[in-house]
Image 1 (cartoon, rainbow, N blue to C red):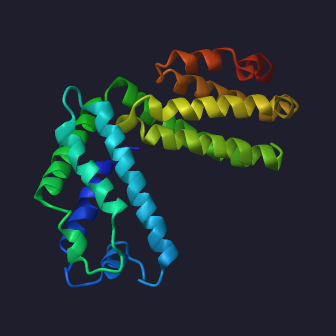
Image 2 (cartoon, rainbow, N blue to C red; image 1 turned 135 degrees about the vertical axis):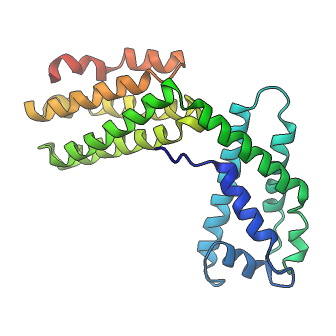
Amino acid sequence: MDNVTNPAAELLKTMETLRGANGDSSTLDVLAHAFDLKNSDVLGLGARLVELGQLNTRAKKSIELHVFGIKDMYLTPFNQISLLLADLKLTSTWKHNSHKINDMMIMGLKFADHFLSNSIATDSAPKSSKAVDLASKIDALLDDCLESDLEDDLKQFFADILNKIRSALTQYRIYGPSALEQVLNETVGAINRRGIEITSQSDVSKGFIGSVFDTIGKVNDLVSASDTVKAIATSGAIFFLPHLS
């Protein structure tokens, strides 16, 4: 949880690697080398390019969330990367693509990396500290889940929920409440759909489930969106709580 991924830092590292590649090499060979793949692994290369595009989208979103006022300077390198990926000529030599990774892009990524790194450090105050504590609590709940006498299907169900919430907490310092809001909404809906199964578990299992619901409530405290708060407050999950203690 302490090592929160900075998407701008990841992009900077990849773009600097690509920029330093031999311009006379094929674009396919350069990309395969950068992604540590064989040039014959077309599916793997395609998947990594998609991941790179998704990373670029996350980086833009994090800048939009953290930068106040004029954002153009910070967003420019991500727009350049989008253009690069939209017109990547795999059959040409790398120099036909590499000119798009220019000084402006690298400098912009360095600015974005520096800004986000400092923003993440600054944000590690009360709520981020609480997110760290909750992530640790979820680790303990995952252990309890594996040792519980829940039915195997429900055991997997709660393990999946806890893993998703922990992942969202990890990204909290970059993306803020939006990282948690969707996961909480999905979690509440999933719990409601399985309400009958949940309330029919043993008393011992209900103790564990109650701890999960208590943790979900504490995670919700990090979310400011009123719709999410309302959804959880009126959820059947909360109705179950008195019967699970």
